[in-house]
Length: 393
Image (cartoon, rainbow, N blue to C red; front, side, top):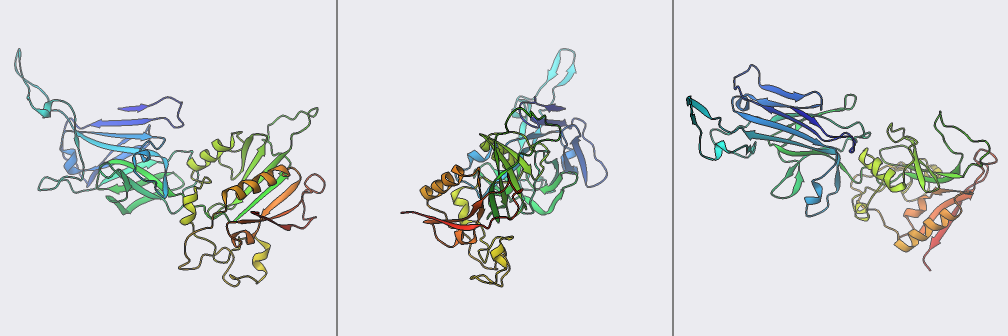
């Protein structure tokens, strides 16, 4: 039995159920139970196949579980939650003669009973693991190497990797198929560290000529509204380029198929990128877990090759073994002031990150700036950048 919900949620809710009414042995170590329509499968051991059970798999395209955790985690769930449950089927009634039906009068005949797979012990316990096959949704574009498969501990109200066999995890990026071995049934998720893309290596804010889709129409009688491009280089992605026009944003790079040049509100775009595996919504507490660059240089920073500075010779953008985690947070009011000032002249000035910003402490901000030549010289290197210092009075 397969059920797929409506179109209101991307991917929809997917449910597959299989009832083992006629029990029998089979050859091999495990038997695949799957539903091609929803791209879910679980391989069950022989012991389970000789039991009258119902197996249910559910894929929910969003995380409805983590809010139950008493404290925040340093990771987030990617691609939704997959539930795997095993139930005992109720004992069937038996007709012994016309008008006479024999029926058990205990809990075994009153509906489904959950089998907490992997939590029982003793001679009859099933010790063989279950092998889960699931496809990550097409909306998940980035899967860094730091991903983990986790199981929700209903008693502790926490995600954990206990019960997941690490050697059984297999991810195929071409087919988007994830396979893993679990000793327990329950709710599963794929996690990414919130700091996977921190610290940002570079950033640039500049006025730009609008990038349009190839089939976009152009009204030559209407003046174009100016736009700016924000480009951020992260630890995992070389360049994330966002086009900002009025109160709407569009993703230019990387070309995530379902987001490329789609007009969205800023928050909506950032949340969509997060769901795609690219988290650009760090919280202040994430700064404590981010690994700083050893020399303070961002890869691509011209100052990185000057041979000067406290990290010279260590390699730009590298992280020294044993380097203490943590990034310095700027003072909130100063940070907001810097954003306002840059925004007020963003239509005519280029802004670029500065290596010195990480070295001047929380009460100062350093950026590089120059007058833009995008409308006159194609924004070639016609004007040099100058360092700009902002500080709290």
